[in-house]
Image: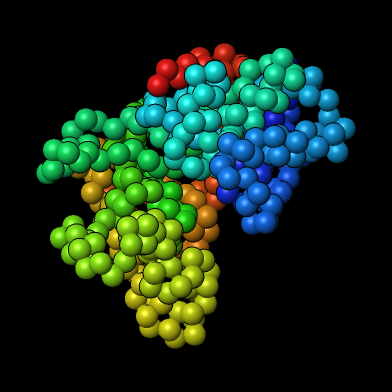
Length: 357
């Protein structure tokens, strides 16, 4: 295998993560924080393009790396239209869509910045498994209201990466496994992976599935309508209750599970109740995926930052291991997952896909 230098870029709302890889090995990495004063100078996300691109170029210069030595550049995928899983070449159609996207999200800059750096190196830019990957069965999208369909917005990048790692532990290929994979983070996604395809998953952003540290999850619909009708809250405030200020934050005013566990150790009964309730809700969502796979489950995979908590993981395992063995793969290495996706293409193991909207 020839040496291939891959630059991975992951723009967040208040940070820019950058990692340089030589094949699968991390060479150098940084996570640069941006103050609210810094970011507030830019009216729109797209206006940050030059600011963020310069940060990436400064990173390369600081580490004495010439962009011309790059084999590829990869950025975190943004809020594009629904697409199949895979590694996609960044094209002008994608750039134009992200640049004019009304959904303001920092991840929209990933492909745009990657493209600007790739042009300097005369190589391709890519994205890998963005949050809008949609492999759901059509049946899984139907609700009791024809105007409303379930949407696929989830932690596709980390779930797919965890699925491949789990398959190795099972001495199988990901495409030959049936897995229930759970990403445990600020948002929580629970997906049924059938032979390498996520045929059902909750919308981990906009109100579906279990509640999480920052999201409300599924809410009794009638009660939510009554809350909207009460005029106690504005529409933006209601949306924040669902995403951003829901879940653990709404109940306990913190979003860090470690702080919740600290409170429990100090005999905080409310913290214990909410903590147990979140584990209970996640367990129910895992159970709901059992019939999707008709009980043929190779493993349940628990991943994401909260999976580092043995106490929390054990609460879930105690309820769901009758379905299948549970594999715990804590954390998420998004940068490596991005680089691995590109490396599979560069090494001919996968074919790069073209996004057509």
